Image 1 (tube, helix red, strand yellow):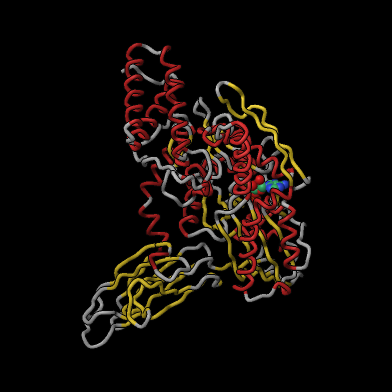
Image 2 (tube, rainbow, N blue to C red; image 1 turned 135 degrees about the horizontal axis):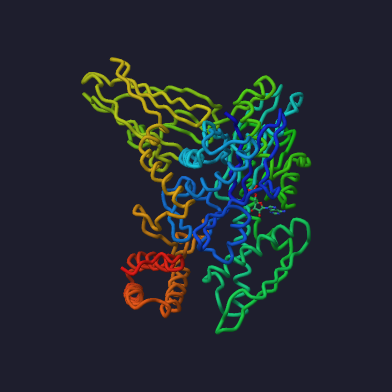
Length: 612
Ligand code: AMP
């Protein structure tokens, strides 16, 4: 089966294959290697992915989803026009687009199997990894291997450098995520010693800081808040990113937006110069956070800065000169520029694909990885001298080299206890419940013992694919039970998986029902937490919701004259109900009705609204 490597980025994605032993990126029919991770649905119900989708973002923000990676592993659905989709379903559309390149390269049809190694940030949780794997499977790829982005970058660097030895730090700052890893290289073996990071920190955050700065200027100059208007917001974001990139080359960047919005039928524009130093100040706290991780990862790996031989910068945001400067100041050496920061991860993923397929022998190159989080169980343990339930008892500590198998001993807590509940968590906090819950099971059949505590051995096995197997065994009678955390969840989600496949097929054939039944209630941030900015409806703040509601009502009002009498009546009923719900502060009802109205307008646009 042909095998490819995929870098699934927050902002951009890429796919690579091995040509002999040389990793190469695959281009689309226009010769473009990098695919913007943006999905758009046209008013004609056609799915568009990549630069075309990106171009449509400003004109039709509600029909466009970007930065979906920031939502991976979450259950809530995102709005793509009138359709509600899970993050992994939207991601599958991006992966399908990349798959087309591989199919063209290998001359495959849709029926031919294609395997993919997909990369994720080292700091992705188990849930985020599983969602990524599912996205690949939804796209019709065989996904047996998920690897960490910095490890992939190390592989791209290590290939052909078998003779090099030393300690490498890989600083990966992309659009939405940050990772830093320390890798030891010797004789073609790349041993990841430690990883740290933040899966919600990247160039996107920098763009939004510029947007906030510009929005304040607009507010001051014109009195309107451009962030209340989805299109103005998207326009500001687009210009902010362009200016940010310019500032990597120039000392200042000019932002000119002649028509940003309207105020009393008068155009509102913006013309502003942003200096590099101002921008550096805006992002200083974020960059400092990345440097904290650098210090932390050195500590984890038990190295000093002086023991690092090479600095490798990966990810588009490392083009910001201040990033290289901070690293240079800290390590006292110049970061390497010999691998392309945009390509390293995809190329490395294809190297891993080559190792897996056997076209690169493990004697030439092999990478070992570490568990990015601690894993363990909830237990009764002494706190301030008294036995306390719910303490997180770690079995595999963070940064343990994987694959790994560890056993710890536990004991029954009460006399005569015949069953124990094994609750499995992942994380670094003291109390089990503060960490990320992975699964649980009950081991029963423990001998009823009133004299002494029964010994229960709990074994954690964590393999290269990030699959955790947990076994609990009552030592005195050998009664044991085990679960594969991934398997259990996969089994639970088989039904959901089939539904997703159907939904995606419908979407691509333009027959998907809008707002399918499983749709969840809309949520919006009333405190305007900008952590997860994009243009899906779920992301709307209360103000944006009001603006969208008003605009939709105005749109409906405009259309109503063209409708047949029964349609007009129905539309009026809807509009009245919606206005009433909103005025009565029944926001849940207003949300639901707004969805229906949007759907109605959409079907009207498509000529699909029957009069019954
Ligand atoms: P990646 O996820 O590695 O593709 O990185 C994408 C991020 O890098 C986006 O936030 C881009 O805006 C950012 N980026 C790309 N080129 C530059 C540049 N020249 N200067 C600053 N940021 C950049």
